[in-house]
Image 1 (cartoon, rainbow, N blue to C red):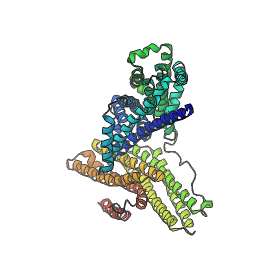
Image 2 (cartoon, rainbow, N blue to C red):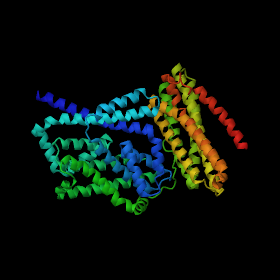
Image 3 (spheres, helix red, strand yellow):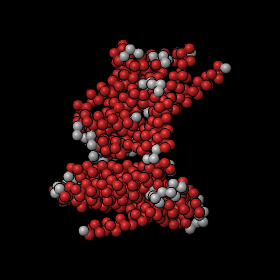
Image 4 (cartoon, helix red, strand yellow):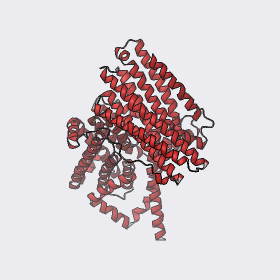
Length: 572
C-alpha cells in the first residue's frame, strides 16, 4: 500500500508539473500568434533610450510570459543592425523584470478566476470568427490551466508534510545552497521556462516543504538557467546577437552567484522581503531582477564595448551557406526517402533566404559592401541549389511514383521555384534598391523609414513562420500563414497610400526616394507571397481550401497581373 501511494504521488506531482509547463507554453503560443507583429514593432521602436527599451522589454515579457521569447525576437533586430547591442541588452534586462512580474501575478489566487477564464477562453476559442479571437481564447485557457496546475501541486504535496523522508531531503536543500542553486538552474533549463520553475519552487515553500533559504537558492539558479536557455537557442545566430545574449548570461549568472554568497553568510536578509517565506522567495526574484537592471543600465555603453572586445567581429557578416546538400542520389530508388531529401534541401534554401532577408534590412539603415557581397553570394548558392534540386526531382520522376509521391514531387518543385524567386528578389531587387539609396545620397523620410522597417519585420516574421510550417506541417499554423498573405497585401496598400499622401504634401525626402520606397514595399510583398506557398499544399490536403477563396489557382492568377503591373510601373 505504501508503494502504491508513492507511485500515485509521483504521478500526481509529475502530471501537475507537466500541466504547468504546458500551460505556460500555451499562453506564450497564443500571444506570439496573436500579437507577435505588434510586439516586434514596439521592441524595434524602443531604441530612443535604454530606459524606454527596458520598459518595452518588461511589457513584452509580461505579454509573452517568457523573457526567452523576447530574447529571440530581439536577437533578430540586433543581428541585422537595427538595434544596437547595448539597447538589445537593455530590452533583455527589462524582459527579465517582466518575467518576474508574471510570476507575482500568477501566484494570486481567486476562486472565481479559473471557471471564468475557462468559460470565456473556450467560447472564444471555439466560437471566435477571427484568428486573433481564437488566440485570445487560447491565452485565457492557458492562464486558467496555470492556476489549476498550481492547485494540483498544492494538493499533491500536502501529504508530504507528514513524511519524514521528504522533509529530510527538503531540509538538506535548505542547508546546501549550492546544490539547490544547481538544481534550480538545471530544472529551469530542462523545462525551458524560468516562470514555471519559479512557480513550482514558491508553491513548495508555501506548502511548508522547502525552507526559504533553499528555495531562494533555487530561484537564483533558475535565473541563471533561464538566461542559459536563450544562450543555447542563439548559438547559431550572428555575432552581434550572441554578444547580447552572452553578456546577459554573464551579468545574470554573476549577480546570482554573488547574491547566493550573501544569503549564505546572512539568511536573515530574507526577512526584509516579507513575513511569509513564500512571499520572501517570490519577492527575492523580483528584487534580484530590479537590482540587476538598476546596476547594469547606467553602464550599458561600457558593457557593449567590452562585449565587442571579448567577441570580435567576424570578417563576413553574412557568412557561408554552411551545411552540404541534402540531395542523395542513392536515395532515388527509395521515393519516400528521396522526397524527404528534397524537402530538406528546400528547407535549407528557405533558411538561407531568411538570413539574406534579415541582412538586407540593415543595408537600408547603413550600407555595407561586405554584407551586400555576402547576400549576393548566398543568392547565387540558392540558385544553384534550385537547379540541382530540379535535376534531382526530374531523375526521381523517371521512376514509377505513385499518385501521392508524384503530387508531393510537384509540390516541392513548385515551392523551390517560389523560393528561388524570393532569393532573386532579396539579392538583386532589395539589395540593389538599398545600394541606390546609398549611391544617390538620399534617405527616406522618418515616417517612410519606420514604415519600411515595420513592413520588413512583418515579412521576416512570416518567413520564419513558413519555415516552421515546413518542419511541423501544422495545419493551424498553415492557416495562419495563408491568412497573413491577405494582411500583408492590405498593409502594403495602406503604406503605399501613406507614401502618396506624403508626396502630395511635398515632403522632400519622400519625393527623392519615391521609386525606391514603392519598389521596396512591392518586393517585400512578393517575398512574402513566395513563402506563403508553403501553406497551400497542407491546407489542400486538410480540405481547408475547398471552401476558401485562397486557392492555389487564385494565388497564381493574383501573381500574374502583379508582374504586368510591375512592368507598367517601371516604365513610368
